[in-house]
Image (tube, rainbow, N blue to C red; front, side):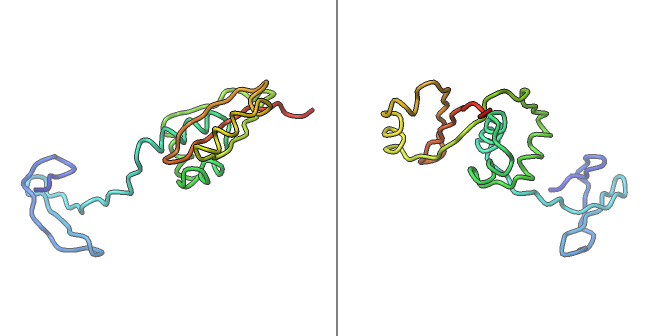
Length: 137
């Protein structure tokens, strides 16, 4: 049974259809309302990953390409959770998406990991490698 969004009472009856949506009437407060449409729910895993990538310095569009969620949605998450990036430094992130065997091969070469910071994070069956390099002056 539906409850009234205004007074939270359960004394509700159907009261017609508007724009293909069922309309209801609360008998206690005489408030008319329709059922709210629930938006598409995105798993918290992807929200967390998007926020992490944003903090690592990736742009909204780069994050969109990686996790497959709209850059506008990512922007709204950042506003919702009040995330701020640290000030810019002399380093910028470079990322690669690798399969497990490609990751092992990449890490086995010493020149790929020498003098750099690395983070490796998992995305489904692939791995994302984030490496910081200095801006060229």
